[in-house]
Length: 243
Length: 259
Image 1 (spheres, rainbow over the protein chains, first blue to last red):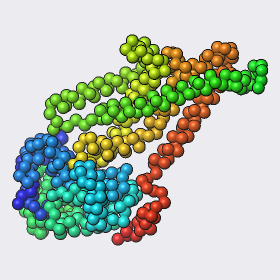
Image 2 (cartoon, rainbow over the protein chains, first blue to last red):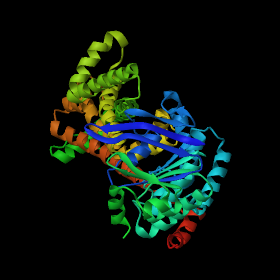
Image 3 (cartoon, each protein chain N blue to C red):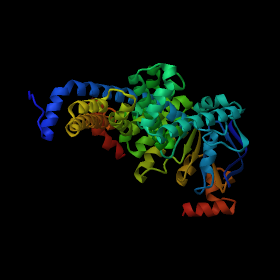
Image 4 (tube, rainbow over the protein chains, first blue to last red):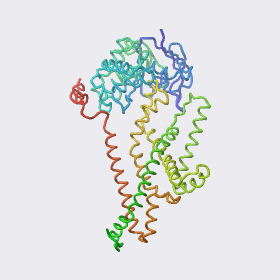
């Protein structure tokens, strides 16, 4: 079943056309990686999916419904698509646990004790349960990103969007975050991952989408796309990453 | 107690303070009352106006909403510019006489009103700067978990913006302690007004105003000191006091890191 259908999406920042007639379908339970050089439009595409960017043309459907069809429903829609940011964006004035409960109690109107219980279960999943009461400003980058993943999971989203989740991390912390994402993929969660970690994309994805200058150049099975890309632009890009 | 006014500056000042202490004390109380209420009410005005001035405009909004937001921004912008761009002394004279037929107010209430609306304009800019200085990722993260405008402001943006802006907010209070002195033009019996009265009785302007200056300095210095202490407390990270969790964090924190 298709969970997200993107059709003929276009977006420009003033004169710069960042997305040109993009069409992409994500099936339920699928892990799709978006790869490409910086400025290729992959992050913008991801941000359009949860409407952090407003697109100019085209439609995005979530479970068959146009996500812009009903303005009032945008906030409700966003709870179904969890976002993990490159720079974590944890709420700096709150503890780890509060970061994970605020959305549940304020947006989903869950009772506090229920929210705490769920938050702790997801913090356990990402290995951060012992830090529940710690202020987030004291955490390392890798720990912050794991908390950010737990915060997204607490909303029980149908789809997870990762916007370069390891790009702001020191190399020694990349592994712990990728490990968490891998375990989520193994659970059969639907995920779209924008990443520069080619080995990880190859290993974890069901499908890889290569973008360049605002268009999807090539997409397909990671084993095929990484080993025998058919388009020259993909070959050029991959040769720089996979030596 | 001395019975005759000494001729030297400090002796004279001491004599004046002893003899006219109650007048100075009354003025000091009025000054503090106006400065405090003016700052607090000004802060609330500033919060409201500052939030309005940083309302986001979205291309997804309908035309009416966009129009309304722009109108509100225009009006609040005019308020801020007018009250920051004219002297409070002029505002005091104008508002006291212009609004007297409407409110039938006393000089003290008028004084509080003037300081409040004047401070409100400055606070609005302080709040707006505090909101805008916040990393936009905070706003995006709140949006991405489904928070609406109000929830984002209330739970994510404002707590951090106010914390960041606290030194500037506290500074407004210190400024107000001094600036209430201009209210003497409408006859509010604050410290400056009382000082001129005492100087009028004693004919010793320097000695009298030395007393006044020292009182102002004590007020502002102690306020600044208290604000610094509060600031230091606020900048301490959440729950950093000695507790079982923070100890566990210190002990296990580094180990986890090494995985």
